[in-house]
Image 1: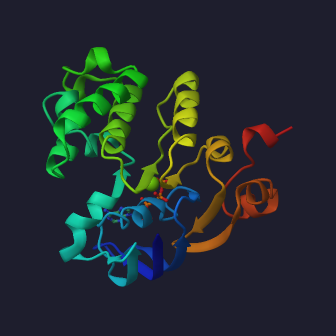
Image 2: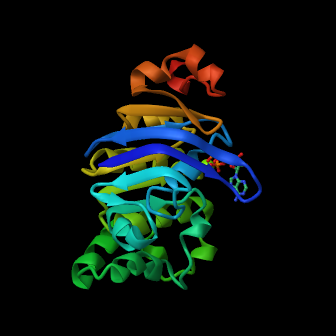
Length: 239
Ligand SMILES: Nc1ncnc2c1ncn2[C@@H]1O[C@H](COP(=O)(O)OP(=O)(O)OP(=O)(O)O)[C@@H](O)[C@H]1O
Ligand SMILES: [Mg+2]
């Protein structure tokens, strides 16, 4: 479903954020990208829907190469929930934000309305659907941002730090929801307990390079590997 080959990315100020990344993800897999602050996780996932375009190397989604020409098609396939909800929410009302993506893709509005309402109800946002997104609390914004992407039912769902700002009960709600989703999932998270519960495979990034790739329970219980890469054991494994 996803093939990344020798991907490298340098920001205009000279920061080399990605340095020769290779990664393949199969259809239906649930993969986590872990790594300390500044490791390059957001830079990597921002390539998956063409928000960033490869400078060196290549990214392929299904049969499509990620490049300027294919961006529109790629965004129909890949839904990206940004690390900062404010990057995702820009309309006058929560409802408009949730309906914006599907309308843009030309999806059937009647069907989408029902799905949008269902998601907003799950996320406890239905009563707030007329509010400006700027007036939501942080956790409410996080859920609204996730709803704007889920409503498009993408083949690949990419979420960058989906649990930050969520209270424990809402975090639990998100675990239950994502575990029922059929699509290929890529999750960036520092919440390794969330990853333990929702992803079958973990990749660890460090300084723009991929340093480990394997089954979640094996990697996340390897204290030495985690500490060498600026990470800590999931809370459930800490004595
Ligand atoms: N717009 C930018 N201009 C210059 N450097 C940037 C820019 N965005 C990110 N960087 C740098 O690129 C590197 C990777 O950043 P990135 O945001 O991908 O890290 P991350 O792994 O997502 O970190 P975090 O866990 O803090 O979200 C960092 O060193 C960061 O300072
Ligand atoms: Mg990030």
